[in-house]
Length: 135
Image (cartoon, rainbow, N blue to C red):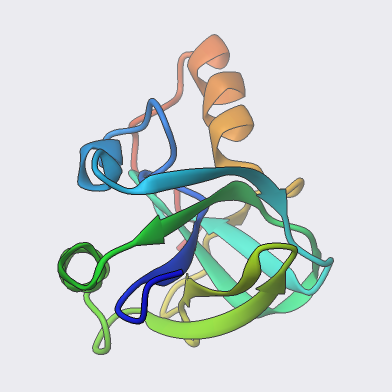
């Protein structure tokens, strides 16, 4: 890994085929990864949020990104005002994951921690792209 590169774990709209995957177009994909069962994922409507506590593993993808891409990801994620970053240990090394520490409303949990599969189920039910919080 180059001195200015970072590993990032993405689990929502940055995954391949999702709405923001173009931001990782130039990044090196390191493949699928599933975290330890230490998190909770919530459905915020058009995107998910993960909290750094819980009992669910999160499914996603690992990328090696350069400094500019990392800055672009920070901007998309509203870091540090909306999301925070924490490091997780992966087989490829320590990687950043974006987490939200406090939710101000009661949102639906993505029970199995896989945003892509969750959205596919919602699409099949005809309820994706609605604002689905329980507030």
